[in-house]
Figure (cartoon, one colour):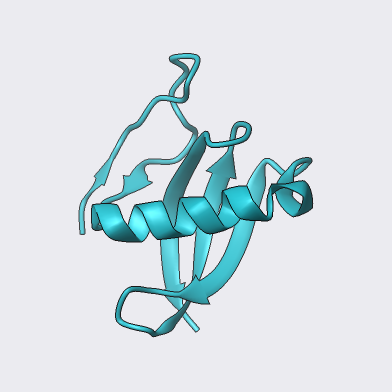
Length: 78
């Protein structure tokens, strides 16, 4: 997996390089974060635990720049 720099909705680069993931995996994680956003609203960095597309438990590290404006930069298998 390679890393790349992404920009938030205001055109400001995220602090961490983005992790290259399958679009379906990115959508799944971002949708789960958005669904539970009140839990993450005040946090700049998020640790989100869920299953990946292969049903393995993982912890995703995510930069939070506001609702729907996330950068997944790390993934660890739990």
